[in-house]
Each structure stands twice: as C-alpha cells, then as structure tokens.
Image 1: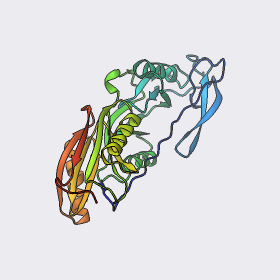
Image 2: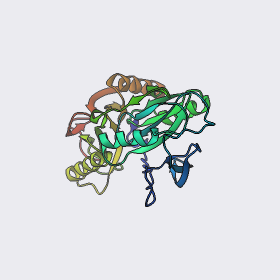
Image 3: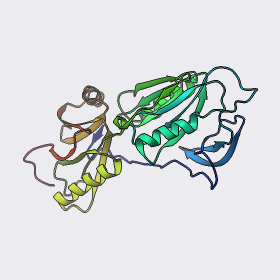
Image 4: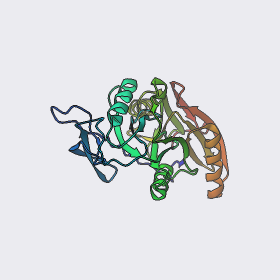
Length: 297
C-alpha cells in the first residue's frame, strides 16, 4: 500500500545468471556436489554466493546415491510458473539440463536453473507484484523465510500457488505463463503534483511498463521528475483516497486488493474511499484522477 507524500518506495532489481565457459556442454546450475559435477563459476542469489556446476556425465548415477526421487527446475523472471524435470532415481541426472531447455523453448533467453532437490516437496509462493519465491516444505526455517521475503511490507500473506514433489516427472508450461506487467507513476514530490496516476499495462517486461508510465507522466505534466510508485505482473492495482492523501496498492486479485486496502486503512485508523482497479493483463495506457477538478499544487 502506498500513500502519497507520507510513504515512498524503492525498487531494486538484480539480474542473476552466469555463462558457461567455452567448451562446456551444458548450462550451469547450482551445485549439488553429486558425482559427475564440476564447478565452473558462481552467482549471487540475494546476499548468498551460489557455486555453479555442470554435469559432465549426466545420466550416470553414482553407485552410492541415496534412494528416492530427484528433480530439478528452471525459472524465468517474466514467467508466472516454473519448469520441472524429475522422478529420477539418484541425484546425478539430466533434470537441470532438461528443465532449462524447456524453459528456453517457451520463454527464449533469460532462463535460469533453480537447482535440484530430492525426496522432498518444493512449495512456491507469489506476491502482489507477481514475483515467485520457493522453499522445500520439510525445511521450516526456509519456508518461513520464503514467506516473509515474499510478503515484504504487503498487508496480506503471500499465496501458495504451486506444490511439486521430487517425483514430478514433467511440468513444462508454455507461452501462457509469460507475465503481463503494469507500472504506475506520478509526479515526484509535492510541487507540481497534479493529483493523477499514470499507468501502463499489458507490457511484456517490467522495464517497458515502467518506462511508458514515467514517460506519460513527464509528457503530461512537464514535471522535472516523475517516479514509479509500484508495479505488478498479472495482478491488480487498486487506487484509493485517505483523508487528503492519494494511494495505491497492488495484489494478485481484485478481492485481495480490496481486502488489503481495507485492512491497511483500518490498521492506520483512517477512512479510505476505494476507487478504480486496473488489470495488468489489459493492454493500454491510462490516467487515474484521484480527485477530479483538483488543481496542480
């Protein structure tokens, strides 16, 4: 939830990934230290350094491998689902390579390996901005962290959207999982604020939505600076007013957006008037006027 003037937002984005060295046969993935793996580099996942390996002998399971089933997954920042190849016996398998190939087939460049897991269930959460978070169900500390990171400063806990056991043989979604982004911007600061929110939605990437929203604000107002206030992928942006403040928040559905706004306003002990909803999957550029007839400050 975002109130104008009293609250602000900072968006940070990091591109994760690494390139395989010349001559490497397969895309690198987070090391599991199974037989046949060789470390070829490292990447950052948040503040954590993650070693990256390639499997030089995929399919040749170690004779000392524990029993049970194993799987691997791949993901893409612009996808609302993940790709899984699993139900392998032993940790030394084709899963990382195959899941990454299937992701690339659907999404093109930009897919990343999420690594492998065995004898466990992978749970996936999604927040109001459409970002996915995951953890292994048996690891209560990791689940708690994933849920906390997913929720951030949102009012409602994140939804659990997927649950995959390592016995999942194949889960290969197609183009239908490509996200559609919405971004909203307004004049930065009080001077020149015109009481309007400039929205671009239905865009294939966060950057294209953000650029269009900020540009629309600058062109319409001539302000020296317009700022991005929030974004969502495949979700809903809800606008509202509280006393003399304009506000907006994003959620995965219209019902959750209303519940979150009402809950926030109740917690803040202010009376809010809910206004318009904008769907990230509806393409277009829109202008929302919080208080029709108001003049720029």
